[in-house]
Length: 313
Ligand code: RIB
Ligand code: CA
Image (cartoon, protein in one colour):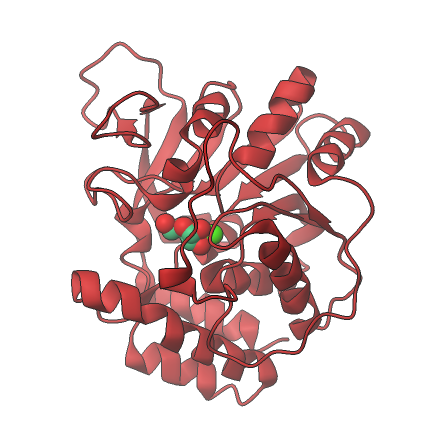
């Protein structure tokens, strides 16, 4: 089976960083065509720097990294330094990148790659707000039928919101972009908080990262040590939730995850519910199912996979 060709669209973010490391550590299953950066956890200047920091940490400075949209389609940018720190990658002390940004805009890279490869052979993996993906779909509507699948981290239903009572951060930052993506007709797999809040870096799991005794193992342990503060304080969680690595792990071991194919709509008007992913989990509407909404995972299997793969870098 040839490796799956993917574009990672990201706003690093410690959990984005772990998702990127897992992808780069798995060349048998995943070929990363490029990394496109978007404003989200921190402004674009930092997300596009952090993505390069992570590629160099992985020993992969040849992965093309593009800067994309620096704000949502039609709203002011909301960031999350209170979660990720002022750099977006607080925790480890990693060197500034030597590799330069690739020439050109992230949106054009996404369009070019989808047009250059046969239809149905490139998967998009958004890990942040969906601004780049929506902009690409608006600029080149023909790509919707060429995308193999969109496997994204975002949204919440039974778990409700992490940035408002009803909305998860990635969707909340750019709900109009999310609405465009969920109405695109492209096959979508959603990793919402419902599943990512079950992927917690408990102390033994963090110890296993550190026990790798490698720069990558140490950096991931330090990232998740820093990143867990917010969720521990808010939810009393037993460790940092590894949201974005659920996307990469799904590509490698989909059997670790379970969900339901349902209709997911995006609230773009509600004063109280803006950015909510309205999942018709019980099939009470006649709205056509448009996404696999993942609700559970084998957490031990996920961390065994992640730790083994990180150990390869
Ligand atoms: O709500 C969690 C999501 O928002 C994750 O992707 C995290 O990196 C932030 O982008
Ligand atoms: Ca992210």
